[in-house]
Length: 459
Ligand SMILES: Cc1cc2nc3c(=O)[nH]c(=O)nc-3n(C[C@H](O)[C@H](O)[C@H](O)COP(=O)(O)OP(=O)(O)OC[C@H]3O[C@@H](n4cnc5c(N)ncnc54)[C@H](O)[C@@H]3O)c2cc1C
Image (cartoon, rainbow, N blue to C red; front, side, top):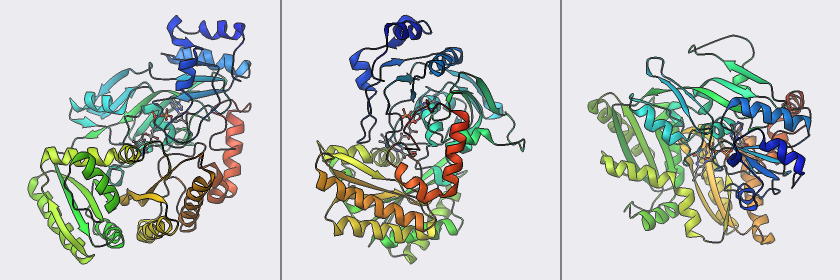
């Protein structure tokens, strides 16, 4: 559906203020793609609701009129998750972006879905609190809930699913429901909240969320550790975690990527396989003890250099560079697109996955950067190429396929944090077997007309 009739336009325009519904070409084109190589079908219109009541009225109408709806947060997904595959209506949450309440005494915040995570952390920071899940991009809370996003701090703090206490959801037919509660725990019935987290907008639309917050740690310690090879660096990951060190970030970086970061950000880091780590604690002394133990453990895994006590400004620059790794790679290869592997495996199998992935990239002489959230067993291979060059792109697809199949065979997953979207659908049956059919039944039960974010998770 790439256009609306005049009656449909009049109906949709009646649900919101005049400037919050558009059928303009540029608005529609701006909602055609995220950062993935997937392009959707031009939506017929974009709507920017500001309240749950508006969302409910709009979805009642789209349901009655068989109009597909694709929710849109900040559009930073990597797998085509918010890309409309059937045209229809895009529901953009950027204007539904109020922080409704912060309750420091309960460590909670109530937010609308369009709130951006950095703004939330600016506001909660005044109370000494923060919302830890940190995808590199300044994503919206609705998009993070829908993708169950995580990031460099997940190794210590967990993913978005661990911070969603209660949600309000508008179902595909316009019914508004609430799930979860404000108590820190509950054993009450099916956990519908977790069903909606990670459902990528295919089961309904999150219109409000109560998020759990946590205290900002008093002391931070960043450490960079260098190794002779990637294997040693990835082995040190399991050793450090297994020794109870509790890192707040544990990232693996290869020399080629450090080289790009040095060139762009003048970091002056040694261009060898490295771990970027961070520890959080209640005192400097405790962190120094932790650092001494980390040093000893890493030496046993062949570490060649250990720099700790990175100054505050350098620490922030280091993490900014790591968060912007994808943009740095993109800037180094203008006019190319990226295919991002996001597999995750048990941490004991991480070294094997890293070595295997680097081997494949080298064997096929591809442009590929192997790195990842090592502490979560989460491996990213950013493969660079031209989707219009069939030979080049099919090679990248082959590498992607081989890595994901290996991850699944080791008990892992095709996506540790980016979600399924369009790009990872082909791996779902392999990963989930019979439970993929159950997922489809759940989808059919809640969205029998298949109108909510069609073409995602399922073919
Ligand atoms: C440079 C860069 C680095 C990144 N690093 C990470 C990382 O480390 N970890 C990580 O997890 N991700 C990472 N990402 C991916 C991305 O930021 C996350 O997946 C994020 O959760 C997407 O949020 P968004 O607001 O952009 O949502 P969008 O991309 O707009 O949408 C994501 C999904 O949510 C749905 N949706 C949006 N709003 C709602 C709603 N209110 N109700 C229901 N469904 C909704 C959409 O339909 C779509 O399926 C990175 C992206 C970039 C560009």
